[in-house]
Length: 182
Image (cartoon, rainbow, N blue to C red; front, side):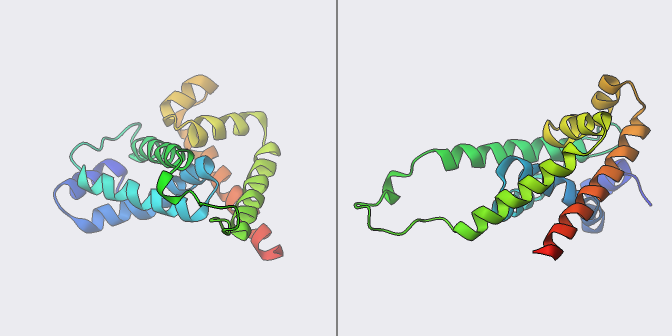
């Protein structure tokens, strides 16, 4: 299996299959980065798509950090998600209702579901060891590189990579269990 640097180099040469491999490898982490900021599945999917479209358009400027393109993707996801947050917080004067009798513009069920998912994530993260919880905060919430997290926690990059992999698997399993119960 090629590492990210080799895949990126091939993608920069125009090989779509190499880019697809990078996408497959990192799409979940990018999605959860966006979801952590937005708390909305649909918007998170849009941001995830936008991250990879941006990566393809800017393929020459994407760089590898700690043998991975994930830090670049995570920072891009965080920035795009924050742009969404800013857009949502600005009132759109053209859609302000003229009276109070118009229905709400948001889907209450989706809002409740997003809140439940966020609660489950917070509950699962709360049950992690202090090191894993800090690792979650550093890499998945703050978008730090593996190297930065390793230095802050006093562990190796390999330990960070392994712990994050196990952490993601556990969170996915916890969320899958929640979906099966609902």
